[in-house]
Image (tube, rainbow, N blue to C red; front, top):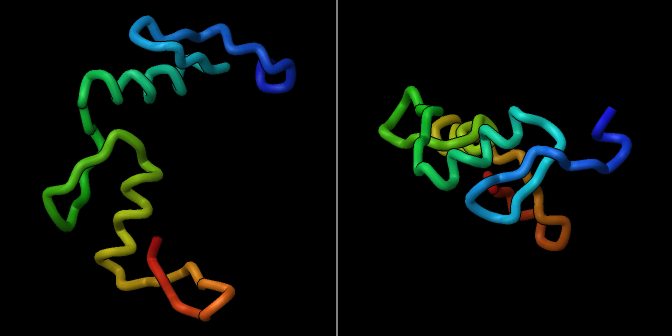
Length: 77
């Protein structure tokens, strides 16, 4: 329900970040600790969020899902 009220009761004790879920706060705290628990299975890279790994995996797959609408250039970013 907090998502709909705009309330952000979960506050970081190290900076001004606040959010509406404890899981989001835990993910945010990884920024401060430097911990990167999400590992790439293909190389030595590691990340603090699953979404960053997902974007990184495009390097290994060669997939280029993003298209520039001005030049039709394909890109993985």
